[in-house]
Length: 60
Image 1 (cartoon, rainbow, N blue to C red):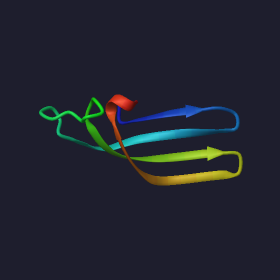
Image 2 (cartoon, rainbow, N blue to C red):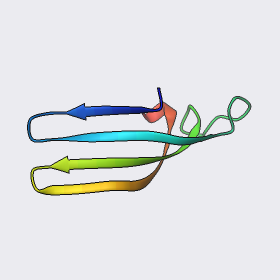
Image 3 (tube, rainbow, N blue to C red):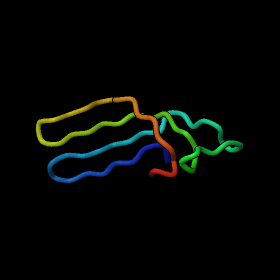
């Protein structure tokens, strides 16, 4: 799995993992592994496409 989608009738959030750092030797202080990804958000007329997102795999 390198992406997931949460959707509804009014829009969606899609998060894609691009690169995982430190796997399998280093974990993040947040838990899991540090990840570089991108996010797409659509809600009604509002839309964000390919925005850069940094997070921990523990957060998802």
